Image (tube, rainbow, N blue to C red; front, side, top):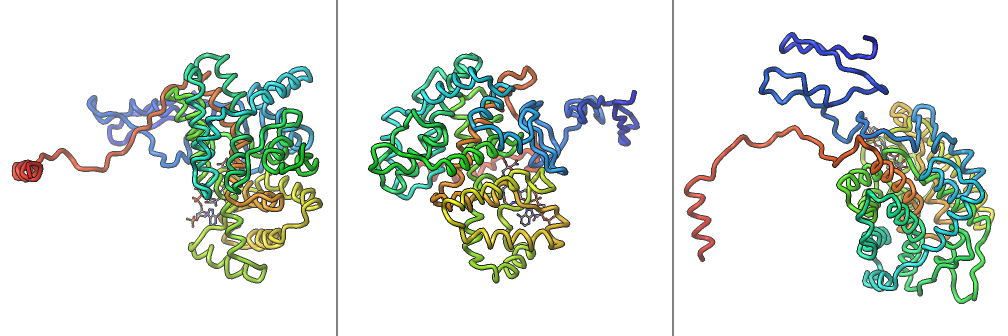
Length: 435
Ligand code: SDX
């Protein structure tokens, strides 16, 4: 009986053998542990799910202690070096890298879905000029649901695949339109002769020239950033995607919920906060004082720390290298010096060492985006574009998982026992209502 947990309940003297599989016990196996037949039985209590597996997944593997990240078994370093984003998107969604003919068909299909309905443009025009692009992104993705009612057929494999291609094709268009709206610039239509990242740059930055010519270094850097941000197993926004998707809401509404979770400053919103933090610090000389503020608990070192990585986030390492290629074209972002010195000081300070706080994916990404010409408000939208693929791969796995059903956690009730409305209270309410 080696793969069992023997539990002795000292309240009753009874013992229980609970099976162990895949390094877990099933929470439902604890419900048999009761003090009497009327007892509900034991539950687990795990606020923020710090030690709870919510699903079985074959998509992404992370070893936080060793700083390992793999998509479908491939190390992120190899994918970033040898593949492009649409190849990695295919890998995440279908489990294998595409053969040449599969890749060509996949690219052509995604390209055919880059346009959005003209009514969606009108919808986006309704936002204030200073509307945050993440608010526009979340709302417009949800609005897509109203254009594709067949997306509600989440159990239909063909419908799922069509919505997945629509979303991957359209999120760069929506993101670019949000950016152009914030600058009061006319929308730029997709150019289907360009690749995924190139076309995104086209829709962002084309002005009066007849055809936009993307800078290949910047396009490749963006492609690599998209690969690095594509998926990250059961993070906060993926949990939102799975939770909303478990009610069989359509993928547009579910993805809108996921993007909303990503917008939080502790999650995907951190890249925007890193730039604000570097601006607040202002110079290398001001770093020691800022570090003291962090250590006193007054603020967090944004872009540092991670629930899973207790080592250097492998994505941050790759981004730091990609930055050098970008700065060759754009010129070095002066904030890089502050960021590098901040990292050096933090990694040698007991406060951060003790808590195993290292730079995460958001620490250097914003510095690249800013050098490329993006405003900080766009940074999380740039995270949401590639993460759309991860959210959809996780959603698809959820829908196809026979073990999954609607997510509905339990609680520890801490409120009042039963109590009754006093007669005088009834009377006073009736008098007020009658006036
Ligand atoms: C992403 O989950 C994912 O996979 C996310 C992501 C993805 O790809 O989807 O990787 C993307 O969201 C990256 C994280 C981006 N967020 C930030 O950079 C914001 C700053 N980081 C922190 O808020 C924090 O590190 C979290 C939210 C990322 C993780 O928080 P945890 O796991 O809940 O850890 P915690 O808050 O319990 O911290 C443990 C200790 C605490 O100190 P003590 O109470 O023990 O004294 O570490 C401290 C925290 O105060 N701490 C920090 C810190 N992060 C944690 N102290 C200063 N600065 C920080 N950044």
